[in-house]
Amino acid sequence: MVDKIRLTTAQALVKFIQNQYINIDGEEIPFVKGIFSIYGHGNVLGIGEALENYNERLDDFQGKNEQGMGFAAIAFAKQSLRKQIYAVSASAGPGSANLVHVAANAFANNIPILILPADTFATRQPDPVLQQLEHAHDSSLTTNDAFRSVSKFFDRVQRPEQLMSSLIRAFEVMTNPETAGPATVAISQDVEGEAYDYDTSFFRKRVHYIDRKIPNQREINAALDAIKKSERPVIIAGGGAKYSEAGTELREISKKYNIPIVETHAGKSVVTYDFPNALGGVGILGTSAANRAVSQADLIIGIGTRYSDFVTSSKTGFDWETQQFVNININRFQAYKLDAVTIVADAKLALQALTTGLEGYQTKYDGEIQKIKEEWDKERERLHNTTFNRNNYEPEIKNHFEQEIMNDYADALNTEFTQTDAFITINDHVDDDAIVVGSAGSLPGDMQRLWNATVENTFHLEYGYSSMGYEVSGTLGAKLAAPNQEVYSLVGDGSFIMLHSELVSAIQENKKINILLFDNSGFGCINNLQMDNGSLSAGTEFRTVNNEIMNIDYAKIGEGYGLTTYKANNREELIRALEAAKKETNSTLIEMKVLPKTMTDGYESSWWNVGVAEVSENESVNKAYEARMKKLNEDGRQMY
Image (cartoon, rainbow, N blue to C red; front, side, top):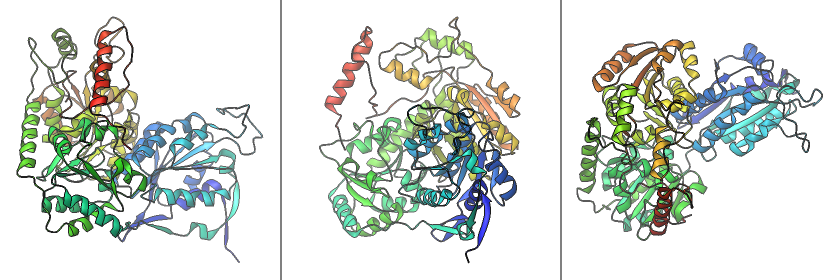
């Protein structure tokens, strides 16, 4: 006789996810740490009731914005190296629609998250219900069908027994390193409350074993042959290297055979900058050292990277006539990119095999790695000490704003602080094990170029989707993953305005986070892009209808939420604020007014291929288009 237990669909869901475990390298931990929810019709009487009565161990947080709580869940999983996740639950209609962006972000970053959007009635008897979309051509189509294109797994549960196969498949996808990403299980709101006699075996403890994929010897031999023939190889460390925890192996192969290491946004801090062969971020946001090493290499060894345009400088950062690629990736689709020699395997195991097989090999670098790194360190020091001059000032982003406009900003914001000075000051004065979180605007460029991590896994940049508004929410998620470390949000005023609702959750749950707010009164990054390509400044500065530069008191906003706040418009004030914030047990916000055009600009082969108008009344736009086409004809290549 099979043992049965009568539960609603939502109760079965809550009971099931509490009994899912993950085992990596012999370490076994619960896979689902908790759930973020915003209740409304569609989930409050289903999942809400189930959490109230059947939750034995899940952390249960009240979100304030569906997108915000979803970003926090993503950041938690990212900071946890995908070993644990949060689920997110939202009401039917707009509540669930707000999670579509969350799914897209998790998809782009290969981050597991369980998304539980409420759906319309399976019976259709009361249709159309509140917030339901009606399609005359398809009665089965709902808001949640939008998740199909942004989920690694999608299902709609319209009967209680469907939950069983749906959840098994969802967890297989989320716990598989090759397919890791968002699993969306939409549950009809009437079905959430319907009961079914479930087999008790469905709720037994399940352990999802993450066995490291062993490299194929044929692939190892091919890669060894390519490396041994090269004289100037360069390693690009991507997110796959970080999630594999391959830092030790990267340092060993680099040190033993004198191979420089550069990093993608997702791979940064898998090897810390104090390692002699670490040259920092690569590509459009890269350092001069990293980009020079890549452009002069004869072999690129990509480890766990999907080669986004920001990594490859829109495929112009390489010398296609002389370079070959070796790609190590758990995902075969990614390994095949750029016509590479492939190793479809776990990064740690692949590097171990290569290190052993390269015995006797040595690159032809002769002090060059250290030389270009020293040159970059001098440039970084220059950027730290940039000062504003009201009479003759040339900012880092040149030929955009005349001196008069720069002076107007200095007066309106009451500051002469440059962004690079503020940024490096922060790097110099936070704790070594502090985690920094960023996502959008000009700050990711400064993070990739200027942030020198000295402790592994302390750099958290969401740049797979670059979601504005991720920064504050992501800082909460990172804090949940690392409760004993200080966590800082590096956020511009544009992103802060878009989304900072989870500040309330941080205060409510007594989770201390620190917001470092760079205010240059506008969307500075896009203003740079706009003006770099011949357009006039329009729609990107924060000005009133009277053309006055806005000066918003963000510290007062933070104070209103209950944060401890500081203002810092020069280096000395910022150092004092940082030291004071460390002593606080409450969440903090430091507002820094910084001048526009004082962030870092591109170095070496840094170029971004963006769409420019082919014809324009503006002659500067026509010139920008001609320059783009010339660059593509000279350097670009349609590589696969």
